[in-house]
Length: 145
Image (cartoon, rainbow, N blue to C red; front, side, top):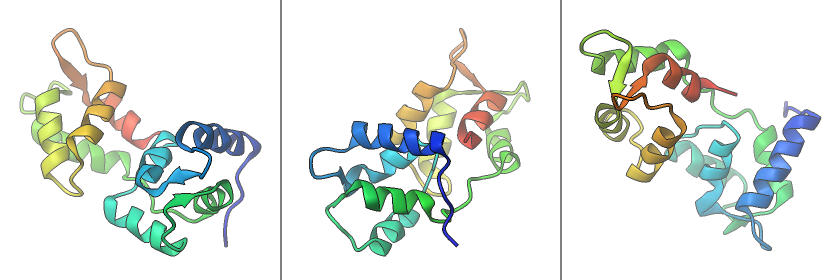
């Protein structure tokens, strides 16, 4: 059964649509970015399925965007899964990982992200004075919303 968006989530969806959309709607090439802006992280495969399910339009009007948001989308990775993946690269066990290691992990393991997608995630993360990212802070970033 489709879920309903709360008034605050509906307002967020409208704001996101205004940012990513144009007069014809959100181009399907930008749909993944729009969903990520709302905290919905889909793989490329999941995104292709979503686009196919809504009829493979070249752009998504607000009604279709709302429909996508009301579907039962794939669950996010659990904090434990993200921690486990990060721990592989936290070689000294201090709870921090370098941006280079994070880029390597995100671009080579699991559902590989593009350099642009990884750079966007790193910009959202807090990088300390040593150029390292707190693993726990990154877990929260990846699992928020």
